[in-house]
Image (cartoon, rainbow, N blue to C red; front, side, top):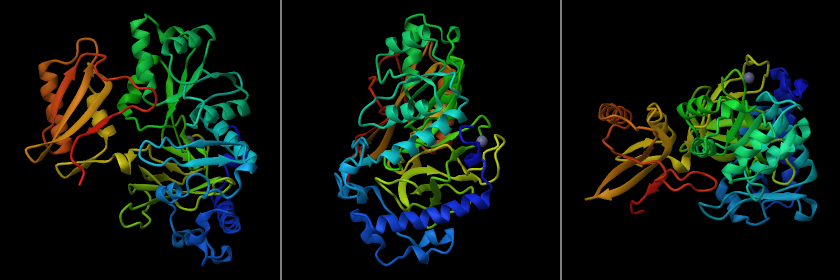
Length: 425
Ligand code: ZN
């Protein structure tokens, strides 16, 4: 562990830290220049007697933050900040998180914990494959690895052949990447006779997208590594909010820095342990953009507050299933692309490159699943089996189109899984 004292705090200690952190954050926000403080004008920090009182506080949504673009949501003036990152803005106005020097120290701390949870030590050589730019991934890994004392290979995004060359020549032991990127690396490796099993690579830390257990299994087999699922959002302070550990029994969220709640996204009411809903995050130690009850739109559930096999006591949440924004509704059925991926990748002849195309045909929804094949693809019999499995899961028939490798465009950054051609009402 990077910080054994903090990572193994007894539950009552964690709750004490959270209660005082929550009061402090509320006071800080109310006294700050943030436009969001109007939400809390009738609530005093002293009104919060127990952690349950958090439930009475209003939420902060992504739209609240967008309305404040570029800086009105910040608690401090940009001149007091050291740097900024920005959400991708693919779905509208971007959100800027500007960070004070203390925020960067906090980021380094939680990221170092994550890297250590993935089994990294100062002896490791970490190749950082997310971009170093407005997207927070590259710098997040950098600050954590620097704190842990790893040898950093700041490769950044893209240039897959160069990535492979560095892995081999520099005897890289671990990498951090956007979850869909290893699929591309494997493809380029295959085309160039590169064998991951002849390298020193042993750990892959993946995030920024939802990825299925089947995809995970495949990456681990093909690369001969162990993978770890890391989470985090620009708004909460970047990658490093939590990670799963060797026990593979959920993602630990660092509770001395964050409070996690799971709510029913429609009724906005808190859910109990095990119930699936939207993850809501309160920051306890952030200065540039403190958040109270921020609605992440990520779908997960609380798995346990008990001490994990790994010794850590911080809450475990389930791997993220999807975002409320990428939940699809086709023929009245709700599902996430990662659930379809999980079914597709059970077939060895299918690749992790797939797209769901939804359109209106004669007034009705139709979904076509375009998926690339690998090697010899799948047999007619397997295709029928797949068709049946998808029907079982979805409850409606979709068209499956198996296409040659390389058909789906390789894009830098996050993969494009959904092409929804339906008319929006
Ligand atoms: Zn654990």
